[in-house]
Image (cartoon, rainbow over the protein chains, first blue to last red):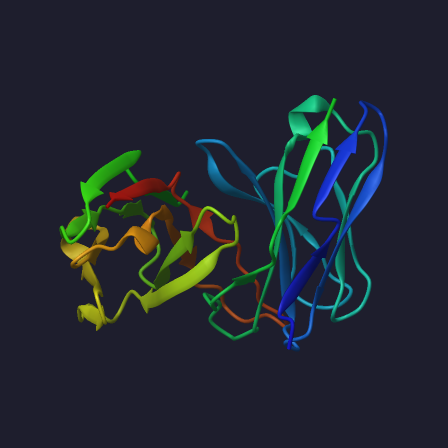
Length: 115
Length: 120
């Protein structure tokens, strides 16, 4: 039982390049999330997916797109990377409940450097 | 809008001292959930506790304890007899309840974290 896995662990991009961050979970969770962590800023929500086939914007969605490929996988795409997107990206998943507020379990993170 | 404030950016104590990490939150909802996560130097986020807004009982788990006070909108975390392995960044987070509508998800609002340093 691997929990939440993310690939790659580390990536260097040049400004304007594109890339996709992959996330998968094996806990049969309905909900999945993407956050970014910047120094001194805590974690901020980029996008989330309540269930397969649905996605919604979070606090900082500009410059990103997401795809909920199936129940297990939720990818984050940078179409044209900018230095401001240098950050550590975390994927998370949680069970779904009628009232929300379920515990989110996080992957190990992807460290992205945009030059 | 919801907000979480962790006013202590960094705390440094000597091993075996007790230490309290403060968390103050803002929300307009009457039903909400509070969390604490630990981020050790290795970088992963480790879940510590979840508490709903209707349960104001204090919680103790080994050397860890949590004090939830709705009257002051605080959810403070105390480590008793601290150890070097407790050195980490600790995040407090808030989630507001969502009415189920065929699929509920709710992102967490995080505080900026408190960097706890335990010196041997």
